[in-house]
Structures are given as C-alpha cells and as structure tokens.
Amino acid sequence: MLTAQDLERKLKEIRPYLRERFQVNEIGYFGSFAENKQTEESDIDILVNFSITPGWEFFTLEEYLENTFNRKIDLVTKAALRNQLKERILKQVKYID
Image (cartoon, rainbow, N blue to C red; front, side, top):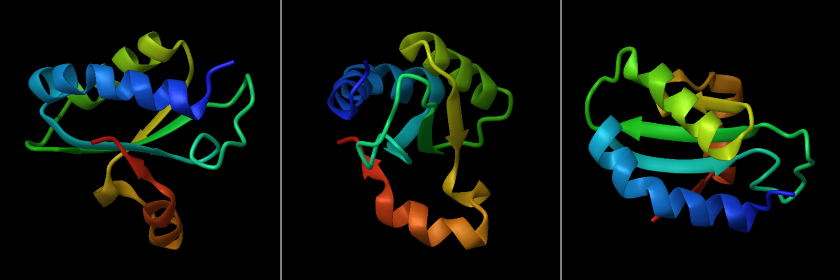
C-alpha cells in the first residue's frame, strides 16, 4: 500500500520535472495521506501553485500525477479552495521542499 512517506519521496523525486514542465512552484498533499489515514482506495489530495496561469496544462498535470501514482488525484490550487475548507486544508497541507 502507498504510504505518506512513499508519496512524499516520489513527489520530491518528480518535483524538478514538475517545475520545468508545468511551472509548479509549490506542491503539497493533504487529506487522508497527510493524516496517515489512507486506504488502498484513497485518492490523493494535492495542493499546487504555478508560477504562471496553467490553462489546460492543469489537466495534463493531473493526468500525469494519476499515471505516476496509479490513483485518482484531486488537484487543487489555493485560489480554488472554498472558503469553508481553506483554513483547515492550509493547516493540514504537507509541502514538498
């Protein structure tokens, strides 16, 4: 089963590619993986920020991450977070250095 440590290790490994290919300047995960409550069926919640407005590349990045982790990815930007969830998510997110 994929662990939070596995997720973090892989995100660190691909971060240079994400920066170059998708202009990702910040990436982190939250939700069940951040709480170590994930199951085999859990999706991966990823918070991302771009150095430029991504357009359709957002969906290409989501697909790339789904193929990389072989799981459903819920990809979101800070700007897209709903106000009622924003504070909780921002407290929970584990950013990748």
